[in-house]
Amino acid sequence: MKSLDIDSFMKKLTEKNKGESEFLQAAQEVIESIAPVLEKHPEFVKAKIVERIVEPDRVIMFRVPWVDDKGEVQVNRGFRVQFNNAIGPYKGGLRFHPSVNLGIIKFLGFEQIFKNSLTTLPMGGGKGGSDFDPKGKSDNEVMNFCQSFMRELFRHIGADTDVPAGDIGVGGREIGYMYGMYKKIVNENTGVLTGKALSYGGSLIRPEATGYGMVYFAQEMLATRGLDFRGKTVAISGSGNVAQYAVEKVNQLGGKVISLCDSEHTIVDEEGIDNGKLEYVMDLKNVKRGRIKEYATKYKSKCVSGKNIWDVIRDEKIKIDIALPSATQNEIDEEHAKALVAHGCYCVAEGANMPSTPGAIKVYKKHKILYGPGKAANAGGVACSGLEMSQNSMRYSWSREEVDNKLKGIMKSIHQSCLSAAKEYGAEGDYVAGANIAGFLKVADAMKAHGVV
Image 1 (cartoon, rainbow, N blue to C red):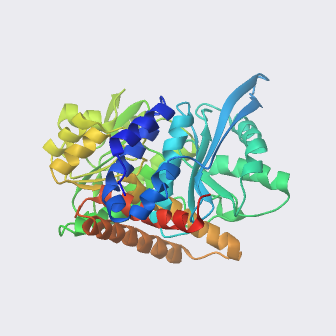
Image 2: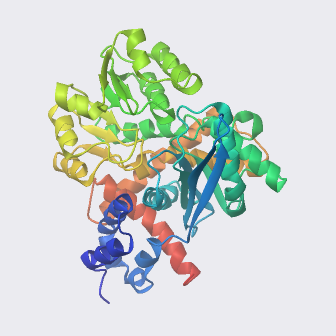
Image 3: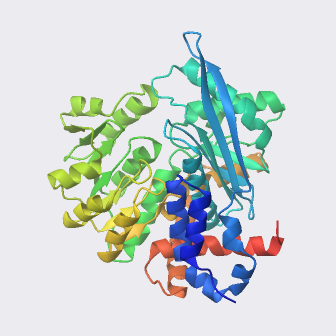
């Protein structure tokens, strides 16, 4: 039997998904990585597993009308893409950001299939969100939007069907408003959203999980070369949940984080963002909902407008050891990657989803940079969401130490799975190939077992 013709396949996929560049980028990376698997397993080719896995089970798009504080009616667009539930209920976050469109949600949902598979927990892949922008909105406006959003979404989700969580623009406030409306509509108290507050079914360590997990994964990669975080200079992008807790964990491990950024400014603090400064950032971003430039005013650090940290490293030749991109997709391009290598970086672990372009990844591989792709390195968040689901099902809560130990174990296991799969299929040390292959194999086996559905 012939194997998959990747060029022909991608041409057809591009024609069917015009304009969805992020989704096509994610699909191409996975399909190129799994070519050796398809050669070894012709049964997957015969069963058309790849043709089926790139098509969502369903795409839901809906209107979200709401009323602002001036009494004006506003209308946004909502999405939920339920991509693949071969190994468990659909699981993936909700993103509220003006850039959200169908292509973005499909890319995120597709990535989620493999990320969730890597955790070894029974979770399928899905994603959702809206082009609503919570920035600059009052709590009342955010509540009105979230309640309207859930008035449609509720009919498509459930504890054993689809369990959404947070993502960019969706934190504890938004989860609370949506869960309150869901509970009101369906008249039951089930763990249908994760990322909940502790007072109504949340899990300890869940807010920290993505940032902590990324650092744990980087720690495992560094250990393969006899290295650790002690005394290392670390650049982190973003300033939300993932970035904040990555700073906290790097500090605990003896590293020094010098940067954070938001959509408008980047701050560089050569002295390091210690725990006291981090406490200020958390209050600024999570409570006051301010901008990161206020950090520079308070601590007299460098502040650059209109550039991300990778621009600043490139332009000002800042030396770093480790990069933890934690903002958004495609934030590091080929020129950024070259600058990172030139200025001493030897490890990149991704806290965001697909923050490195294909050109950047080629640079990492050429220079043998330790590179942990998002679907592996940032899987700690969804892993802990899976643990939250387990606790909800048992009507029981584990201690902080128990959850953190389970998280460490999962990240260690993901790291080992990536290395083992890469080695087995002739790409030793390639975490991209390893993550895609290990994630794919479990889902493909399940899809084949279920027949043509």
